[in-house]
Image (cartoon, each protein chain N blue to C red):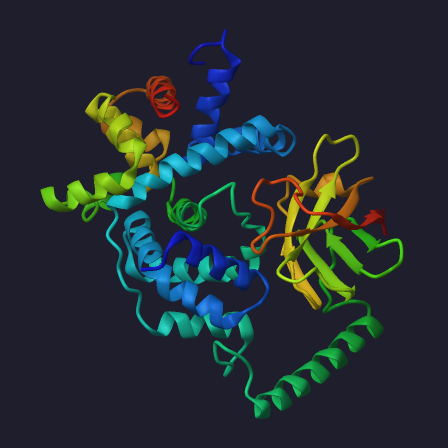
Length: 232
Length: 180
C-alpha cells in the first residue's frame, strides 16, 4: 500500500499496525499466521513494541486501591490464601474442596460428561526424557484452550539454572520457546493460538538456561531431554 | 526504585510460582500499569478490572518472558496496554461518538512533566518530532488511546483509506528514524 515495490517497508508498516492494534480482525488473523512462521516479522513486532512502549513514559503512575491486590491473590490462589502461602488450617478446606470436585468429576464421567468441558481441538502429549532418564518431563497441550500442562517428574536443573521448554516444529529452522517451568511438580503454560498447530508432528525439548530463561530467544544451555509429540 | 535486573529477577521467580516475588513485582510495577489502564480505558472501574486481569496474566505468563528479547518493563507495558486496548474494543459499540471518550485524555502534561517524560521516552520522542505534529499525535492516539483508523479518520475529517495511507507513511518514516 505504501510502496508495493518494497516488501520490507511494507512489512515494517504492517508490523507497526499490528503492534498498535490498527488491523481489522481478518487482516490481524492473516498477520498472526505469518508471524508464527516468519522470524523477521517477530523481530519487527518486538522492535515496535519496545519503541512504542516509550510512549507510556508520558503516562503518570497512579497507585491502585489496596483491595485490588487482594482480589488478584484471591483469583489466583483461592479465597483466604495470603500472598505468600497457605495457612495450615486452610489446607483442610482446600482438601475438602478437592474431594468434592473429584466427586463431581466422577459423577460427570458416569453421567455423560455433562459437567466436564469438552475440548474442541486435538490434545497433544509428549514425554521428554534424558537418555539415562535422569530428567523426565511430561507435557500435554489442549489445542482448544492453549493450556500446556508441564509435569516435572524427575531430575533437577544444574544449580543456578532453570529449565526451559522448546517446541521444534516439523521442518522448522529454530526452536520456539514455550516458557520456563518449575523445578518440581506441575506448571501450566499458555501456548498462543498461532503456535498450537505446530505441535502436530513436532518435537519438544528441555534446555538449562539462566534464571528468567534464554537471553537470546534460542536455547543457550545444554539440551537435557527431548521427546516427540503425539496426538491423542 | 526497582532496577531492570530487580524486575527481571522478580519475573523469573514469579515464573516459578514464587508468590512473595509476585507481590514485590506488583508493588514495583502496578502504579505504572494502572496509569496505563486509566489512560487507555478512561474509566476507573474498567481500569481496575483490567489491572486484575493483567496481573493474573503476568502470573500465568511470566515463564514466557525471556530476558534479552524484551526489557522487562517493555514486556509488562506491552502486555498491559494490549489487554486494556482489547477491553476498550470489546466495550465500544459500533458508531459510538468518540468525542465522549476524550474528556480526560486531552489534558496535556505541564512543561516540566513533559520534559521528564521526554527523557524517559527514548528515541521515539525525537523521531516523533521529525513527523508533522498531527501525524505524531495520531500515532500516540493509536497507542495510548486505542484509536482505530475509523476514529482517526473522523477526527481528522478524511476518508479511512486516506488516513491509513498517511499513517502507514508516517510509520515508515518513524521506522527509518528509529533505525538510524
